Length: 49
Image 1 (cartoon, one colour):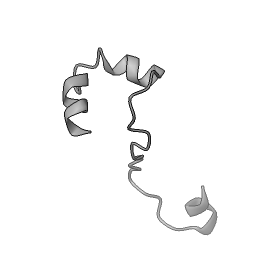
Image 2 (image 1 turned 45 degrees about the horizontal axis):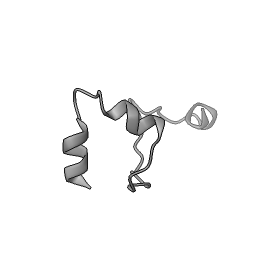
Image 3 (image 1 turned 90 degrees about the vertical axis):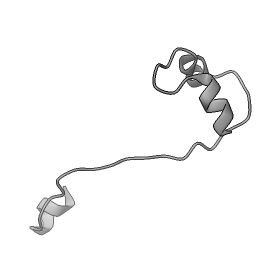
């Protein structure tokens, strides 16, 4: 919106990322959903931690 406001070229894409900030083992909706994740199963995720 700001690019259009100032008359400059708009970006072709936006890549949004966020770091994993809470790495302790606790029950959360995201952790429960990761149990069934086909791309990043819980075992691989635990190995990365």
